[in-house]
Image (tube, rainbow, N blue to C red):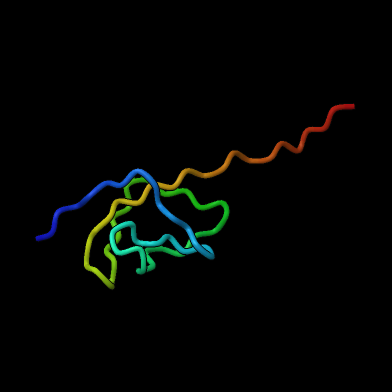
Length: 66
């Protein structure tokens, strides 16, 4: 069994979360409003498991000042 490692930053290229270990594998396809917490994902290229945390952006306010 491989150990799970936590990394500080994830790289997102073209909407894909890139593996922080091998930097070549794609772990997860995301959208701009994606929010994920403690999601384990295993890289198909290197086999390492990574915990993915993505915070959702704050919603834009629709209130306008007059």
